[in-house]
Image (cartoon, rainbow over all chains, first blue to last red):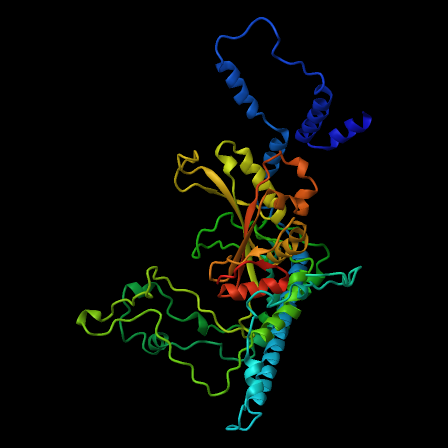
Length: 179
Length: 359
């Protein structure tokens, strides 16, 4: 029981009331005596029983009180107050981070554009490969331009989706994988 | 806040010699016609009563001495100071309410730590976003590449907002008509996938309509706690627009919750769904293929069992009252303009789709 008292001191009062309620309910569950006795007084009207049943349905669960208490927290935290040097350091780091992000984004965009241009050049070469007028000239180009089934089922196989991680997985590939 | 005083302080630090400014004898003055006119002939024209309050000479014509300017050395003054100046009693506090763009007190940008909406920056990269940047975007661009030979002339398309033919004189300056059809709505045009038009996730909306809130508001509180735990965003409560007697709904009764978030949080949530929750759902074929609003936003939902599979709920699900944990809908907003592009993006991230695919 000493352990119980130390934990209750640390927890919030509501949580402690919940814990004590749970503990007490475990002990008293077996000791409940059925209300309705076999003999004697049966009440005239059933309304007080119905009212009691309705009240029981809306018993305040301590977990609900706990959730309500914690949901009441104000939405925004207290605004920070930085000293002059601390603010200067934040400003410098923020600008450096913005610059680094911008450079990274621009590098990625440039890389995508470079790839797109390379694909364009390759397709142009393929288009002009065969001399015009011959039988079935431009066949490879037409095959390359096909877009069959990319938007339907299996356009991108489900095995393709593996998010990149810093370190490899313990099981690099599940060789027993089946569709 | 200290950051507000910085610009002027920095300007003083960057100016090396104040004296260099006043090198030229003639002051740096801007010429303007009215000043020159009054300077040229002040006595000839009688000055009106309104202008008599003005000073006769322009302040730009004043000459200042170089010695006085040389004596001003704030760096030396600061260095000679033996003790630190006491902290000023003024404490900057950002305005609590936004009172419009013309108000003298404007709120600082959200990146400024003095702002009330400052959230400390990203502390880790999101692996789904990194995967998209390095692998998925390039592969989608390659998959959807359409070759346009140089010199192709695009076919002339009919105008989307139809103008009036000038058959009647009243057609002049009349506003354009909407598109044809019973709805008459302008749809998004699906454009080819180019380096600037690769579909990506822009945001996520999580929504839950709590029927139990009609009888007991505790259901709404519990649902709010569940959504906050799962998304990390404080949900917004919505009230019923009109009452329905069949369900016991009254107008302006709080009934549903939504959470909207974008950026890193959105990628985090989608990654959690794909890698943690979807694999655990029993007998789950995939997201229904008919999902989508024809504009590139894909939606799916979780019932109570699905919601309990989220790690934030699974770890302490007995802290929630029984049968009060709600299910919720999830809408993933993408920059795609059509459903098939959005499905392409999400299937490359690992979302399976089943059944008939409808755009």
